[in-house]
Image (cartoon, rainbow, N blue to C red; front, side, top):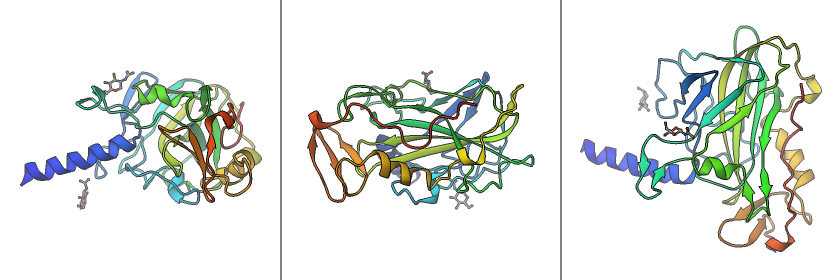
Length: 276
Ligand SMILES: *[C@@H]1O[C@H](CO)[C@@H](O)[C@H](O)[C@H]1NC(C)=O
Ligand SMILES: *[C@@H]1O[C@H](CO)[C@@H](O)[C@H](O)[C@H]1NC(C)=O
């Protein structure tokens, strides 16, 4: 009975992992922090907000901020980091998958990856309204070469097992912050967002914070931007790449165009990276 339940839990996990993913652990200023995706009753604490394997596929979904359900674990804490240092997110499992011949990683190679931060009050980030206009972009990586459907996206490296290195602003004022990093999967329509959030305690000699006008909200940040940047010929500004065929769809209404028609540049969603 137990074996059976375990086997079926593992099978459904594999199905989810094949399709999706999230950060399994982080390396921050030399320390390793577990991403507690599978232990929602964990009371040892975690820097990571709770998340599940489901994609966020609606731009008005409150879980666009930090995933489902985005709440802090009991005894949540903060990873110390010196402003300007790099946060490494590892999306891989420890075990090698038989079908892949390598560990499971993030399940998609097409789409941009973005990271944002939000300053928290002195008492901490735990009760911050994640859907408020508090976020500023600190890092992004998109299409490195080629076209949307056939090009080389930075995400492909993570799909193949590389760690994700997220830089932070050197001039950032010390204090408590949430870092929100996301994968935007364009491979399966409609587009899918996979946000993860962690809590940081930033130190350093910087004194900068973005102005209110430079902050965006999730949901909110992407509606306008998608309208502005992604429309080819009217209709819904929502595009996705159909993997394995040379088409990009716009829906609704569905518009199929050949890959030769595609612009080579991919406009990154959201605001510009805050320069500090
Ligand atoms: C967490 O605890 C609740 C309540 O005891 C239980 O129903 C649930 O199955 C637990 N979840 C996990 C992932 O262990
Ligand atoms: C990421 O973590 C996995 C699991 O611990 C490990 O096997 C893998 O080597 C790590 N990836 C890199 C690029 O270090």
